[in-house]
Amino acid sequence: MVIRSATALRNDYDGLVKLSKEKDEPIFITRNGDGEMVFTTIESWEKREAELTLLAEMLRREQNRIAGAKTFSMEEIDSLTEELLNEG
Image (cartoon, rainbow, N blue to C red; front, side, top):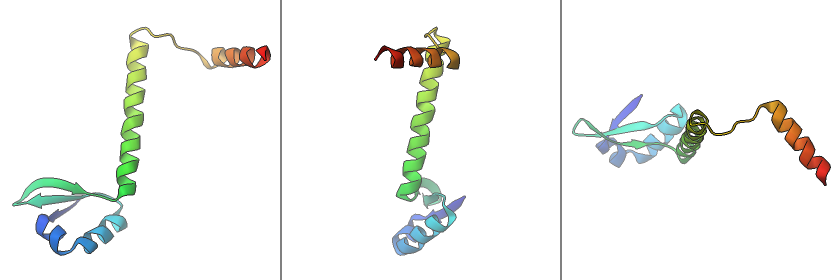
């Protein structure tokens, strides 16, 4: 975990960009010793957002399954797919 002060961000922005890219991890920015924000690359941010979106969708589907939503086995999906393809 990389931690830097807000002063370091202000005085050495380019250095923090380079460090964040080299370490491929976020940098935690503090002000007066307290955590204030996270500095990260756009690529890391987008990857994390995609992972969180996927996890949220997986959770939603699992909650639906537990609530009694219809589920299908791979065999049922294969059979339904074959039926649809043969209708045309």
